[in-house]
Amino acid sequence: MKVYVVMGSWEYDGFDDTKMKIFTDKLDAEVYKQELEDTVKINKTYYDFVHVLEKTLYTEKTIA
Image (cartoon, rainbow, N blue to C red; front, side, top):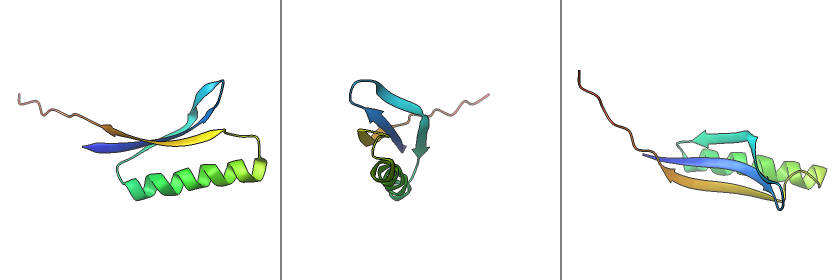
């Protein structure tokens, strides 16, 4: 199962996990990314970068 992790980061300080969100739909992830980027444009000092990272989530079923 693919999940999309959206988070902002700073060039020298690393990632900000307080606003990190995980989505199962890429379109929702892109919308949230745009929201964070709009915050950057308005405040001009919030994040240096906004990332959408695609990860594969492995799940296993346990049979009792």
